Image 1 (tube, rainbow, N blue to C red):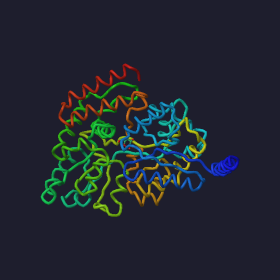
Image 2: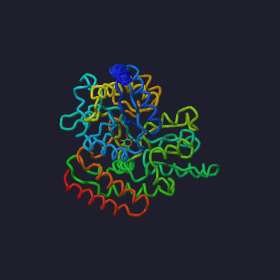
Image 3: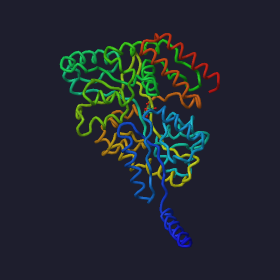
Image 4: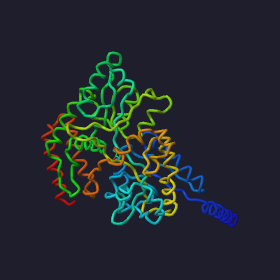
Length: 421
Ligand code: GLC
């Protein structure tokens, strides 16, 4: 009896040993905004099918800051639970020490296809901690039908023009739709507000919060002017509740047909053009407006794929990353879900341009986007960004004047700098 059990156990071990040799199971912490999860799963499943491995795609928090906190905890404990992470463009300096060096896993010819600035951003002390997957830049969405209805020929070039146009459209539309608003954006106190507010400040000529030499520059008259203008939007052309909005909250209002303008990332385009969307065929995309005498600014966002340095399956993890960041999959994601490729040649691909025409018309916006000061502030970036977003949030909620906020952000970031960056 006992012998038989042992034998049965042995047979089972042998059989499962064989099954094991056929493939491993990778765990992938990917996306959750918009169709992010489904798109990650599609790509991962295609790789799994091709290689005989399995990928478990996790549900991850929606906001980048919440993801960061969770991943820092896992990596800090040297956990093997996740093999592949999708990491934000501002994270390499924050978690790079716990990520594998992928420079030997991606052939140079393939790596050279990506925008060099992103590869450089992802290289920490000579280590390639993430392979570029998709890039992001803030853009202005508008309703082409409503601009026409109210007699406007093109999207606003300045924030003041946006204000006038949004006001007029809002007044007209409210007669039949009391919920209608002029402009929605990301006004909640989180990383998304850092992105939006950097665009306001930079487009007024107010700099980049901290410059590339590490000098804290935020307290200047142009920052104050930018904050004043946006403060005046809240409760007029933007709902009071915009100070609770992240990307998806803004998109839901715009896609529901209840806003004239929206600031968002490119993913919102495919979502708005999808079958069943009330605004399908009525979406225009333009560069964001500028301040007086300034130029439009788009914050650089985007995501990379990284391998956990403690993964039990480093080879398979690197292979999954190579597949997903490759040209074919980037093309699929651009067409299906308007994710901006990090491979320059895809911006000339006719199938891509047909699906997402603004990848061609706004090419300069994507290649000249303004970076958040992550590289220069290194491990302190998160604290710097929190100080900035909180100061701006206090202005939007009228807890603080623009002057007081600019001065308080300046002194807080200077204090953080004193602790080293
Ligand atoms: C987008 C950007 C990312 C940014 C985030 C803020 O996901 O790609 O870089 O940090 O939005 O909400």
